[in-house]
Amino acid sequence: MRLGATLAHLSDAPPFAVAEWARRLVGAGFESLWTPQIIGRGSLVPDPFVTVAVAATATEGVEVGTATVQVPLHHPADLAHRILSLKSVCGDRLTLGISPGSTDADYATFDRDYTARFRTFDQNVARLRVLLAHGRDERADLAPPAGATGGPPLLLGSWGANVERAAREFDGWLASGYRRTADQIIAAHERYRAAGGRRAIVCAVRLSGTDDLGPTGEQLQRYAEAGFDDAVVLIEPGGPDPEKVRALLP
Image 1 (tube, rainbow, N blue to C red):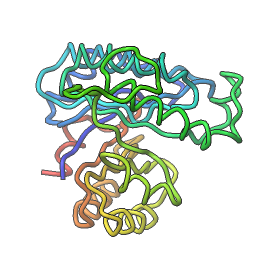
Image 2 (tube, one colour; image 1 turned 60 degrees about the horizontal axis):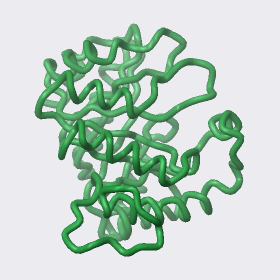
Image 3 (spheres, rainbow, N blue to C red; image 1 turned 180 degrees about the vertical axis):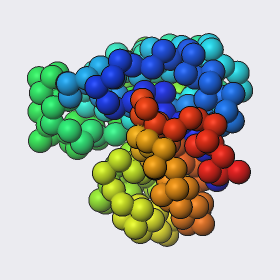
């Protein structure tokens, strides 16, 4: 199992200096760098497209990605333009985790209907796929041309019946460890694999202090034994050194 790290944190402290933090994480041995889209919850979590672009230019060789972009908060044409622009910076290192979103505060900030998020997600993703397949701004009712290069891999971050949907319709699944127990995550992973799912990532495995090292090491071992392809830790300000976290999974 590969080990990645999150470029942002979710505390009230100022954001990490992205370039410096990205270089330190890569220097510690983390194999991928990720960031979420969170807005309207009180503290600043920098824009994911800016964050990933900075991390990609500050490092070499490691995967960079979003975990996750909330698709219903964007117009699909604008989102496709931003994704393709980001891919022009990151190249094949970019992976895009997307989701319907899970927090009504984000929707209230954008004056969007939280109750309609799953329907809007379905509509926007259908159009987004066409736009990304063209690799340029096009009408959403046009079929992709032969030889289109397309956008980055799309991973779905969601729960419930969407676990099986991630297996059927997406390039992978992102399981958030922020509000779920290891038992819940591993049980959902079994469903994902049974449905034929490919890449499986457990993300937002949070460490807020040095006391978290032991329990987190045990969690990571469980995820590795369960067959996850990647785990992504979220180190808060005041948390353990990245080097000590990376050493949890040799």
